Structures are given as structure tokens and as C-alpha cells.
Image (cartoon, rainbow, N blue to C red):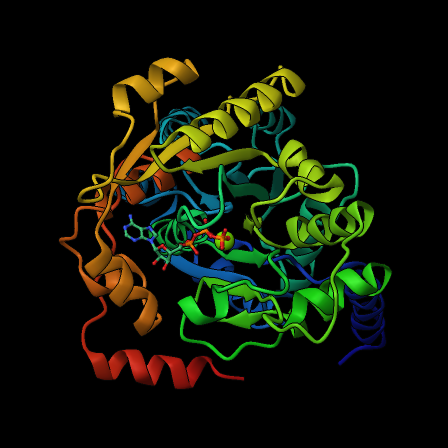
Amino acid sequence: MSRELALLDEVEAVADERISDRARPIPRISIQAFCERPETAEAVQVAAEDRRLIKTHVSVHMGGVNAAVAHYLESPTPNLIVIESVLPQREFLAALDKLAESCDAGTKVIVVGHTNDVLLYREVLRRGVSEYLIAPINPLQFMESLSNLYNDPHTDPVGHVYAFIGAKGGVGSSTICHNVAWTVSEMMKQSVVIADLDLPFGTAGLDFNQDPVQGIAEAIATPERLDEVLLDRLLTKCSEYLSLFAAPGALDREYDLSADACDIVLDVVRQNVPYVAADLPHMWTQWTKRMVLQADHVIITAAPDLANLRNAKNMIDLVKQARHNDKPPMLILSGVGMPKRPEISVKDFEAAIGMKASAIIEFDSETFGQAANNGQMIEELAPKAKAVQPIREIAMSLTGRREQKIEKKSSGLDGILGKLRLKR
Ligand SMILES: Nc1ncnc2c1ncn2[C@@H]1O[C@H](COP(=O)(O)OP(=O)(O)OP(=O)(O)O)[C@@H](O)[C@H]1O
Ligand SMILES: [Mg+2]
């Protein structure tokens, strides 16, 4: 090798090292790339295997923008789509517009182009594309772009926080929280964390048949220590896309939570995970109120009786008043039609509250009782149960999705093997 070439190699190596210092670990996002050239696919694949992307879900496809357009007619869009283009400009922009029609809110797009053309660059950015990289890309450069996109404190956090709270104790709020979170994880194929904020009595661990690290108490006790590395240690993985931030569920300590500590913890989680389901206990303290008012969506579960009606109305009024610019909270009526129980009818309940229930979940002690005792979700236990559809509708409404098929696990053995593979 000539001295000049050796020197060039050295300069490149130093530049790569600088980039490698700049690229920080990427949050738990899902990334799908649609490449045209094998070199680009390989660069994305090499980046996907880097330690910084260890928490992300990356899949690489060929076929460029047209394959992406066809793919997303059927499937939900991930957090980030990477599109390589070798098409003529007009054709590419038209395909990009088509792709935009099936993009969910919050999905970002990076384009890898083969022309260094300012006009194209502008056109692409005008369409909301986050970045235009010029091929050939190398893995470190690609990671630096991801890092800039997802680790910038000035941009929106990746995650949406959904706060679930009951209008009374024992009305099924946690059950709905866990089932909806599971459904979102299966439907969207994006990471979801259930934050069980009922520290002494929380059931998330039991409901998923897990013996979890009881991480959330540690995080809330020393919130300033929580970063993406510690968070990783404190989460318990239930399935590929679902993790628990589990409660101790023990009475050896008293838990007087501070609103500030809860805030900090939830902020770290939402910086790292696309969906956070906060399972709140039925109580009204400074911290629960703050959680409810700060969440992106609030889901209030009520049973059809008078005390639930009064409490749900108070909560809904307060949330609406404090959050003019947000969607109103969602009302879920649960345990409807319990035999021999005098109930307020759904129609009267809705009229008194002044809003329609987003879902009505009938009383079904057999299915719910069995699911709770088995540590399973309703749809896993009984895909035909009446509660499955309303739970899916809540998940779709929260994520802004149309109906998605949830792929069935092929056999029990797969499930067990999967669990073993997922254990760390
Ligand atoms: N639609 C339903 N039909 C029958 N049983 C139900 C239904 N929904 C929930 N349950 C059962 O009711 C019990 C209480 O549910 P869950 O713990 O979800 O309520 P919660 O509102 O979170 O209670 P807490 O106030 O303790 O937090 C559980 O045993 C659950 O299986
Ligand atoms: Mg609960």
C-alpha cells in the first residue's frame, strides 16, 4: 500500500473513532430499512449488531421505497423507516408521498440517496423526512444519525405515557392496563413498558407469570441514578416487545412516593421506550394527580354504580379542565352485567358523565379469574372471549391504529423456547 493510501486509511480511522464517540446508545425503538443495494443493507445490518443498538429492533428488507409502500399498506409503521432510493427524483418523491399516507404519527424517516442534489434534499426534508444521507453510508455514520435523531434533549421524547386509573378500587383498571399494553406490544411490534406504580400491592408480575426484578421501587428511591443502563437492569422482559417495571408487592417498607421522583423516573422511561403504560393505584395524592395530569392519555376505568359514577365524573372534569389542549380522558366501563347486581345502565352512566364510554367490558368472572390465576392475558387464554375486542379497540384508539392481526404463536413449545431465549 502506498504511503498516501495508508495515510488516508489512518485519517478515516480517526474520523470513525470520533463518530463512534459521538454515537450514544439508541432507545428501544423499532427500525425497518428498505434498501436497494446490498452494501447499504450490510451497513444497516452491521450497525444493528453494534452495542449501541442492542435495545432496538431492526429489520432489513430489499426493494426500496416501493417495497416499503406495499409493506405498510398491511402493517403498522415502526418508529423509524430507512429508505434507500435509486429512482429518478420525480418517481421517488411520488412514492414517498404514498408512503406518508400510511405512516403513523411519530414515525420518522431517513432517506439514503444516491444523488448529492440540494433541490432533492430540500424536497425530501419538506416532506417531513428527518435526514437525507448520501450513499454509500457506513455503519458509524448511520449510528451517529440515529443518535442525533433520538438522543437530542431538545427533540420530543420517543415515548407516549398512558396513565390507567380506577374510579374506585378493584374495578379492573390494572387488568385493562396490562391487557392493553400487551395488545399494543403484539399489534405494533414496538417496545412497551408497564410501570406498576402500585408498589405494595401491584399485580403486573403475577399477571404475566413472572418473578420480576422489583425495579420500580429502586428507581423511585434514587431517581437521580436512573439512566438507560440502570433502567435496563431494572426491567423484566416478558416477551420480545413487552417489559415490566415491576412493583415489590411486599409490605416490608412503607411507600410515600414523591411526585418529583415519579416524574424523573417516567421521563427516563419515556426517553427510552415508545409506549409506557403507567398502572396507577386507586388513590388521590400529589404524585398520582401529577401522573394523571402529565400523561399523554388518561384511561379511567369505572364499574356501573353510583360511587364510581361520582368519582369518574370528578376525575374526568378535573382532567378536562387541566388539559385543554389534550384529548379528553378515555372512560372504560368494566364488569358490566354482573348477575344480580343492580347497575346504572350504560346509557344513564354516559348521560350523567357527559361522554361516551370508549369501551364496555362485560363481567366475565370465569375468563378474567382464570387469566389472573394462570398469569395470562385474556387474548392468550381465550381469543374468542367477549373482552378481546374492546381491549383491542382501546389499544387501537390509543395508538391511532386501524385493526391489526396479531400473529398467533405457533405452538406451546415455541412459547417455552422463546421464554428461555429471552431470559438473561
Ligand atoms: N370484566 C371483568 N369481569 C370479571 N372480573 C374482572 C373483570 N375485570 C377485572 N376483573 C377481576 O377483578 C379483580 C380486580 O381487578 P384489578 O386488580 O385489575 O382492579 P384494579 O382496579 O386495578 O384494583 P386495585 O384497586 O386493587 O388497583 C381481578 O381479580 C380481575 O381478574
Ligand atoms: Mg390496580
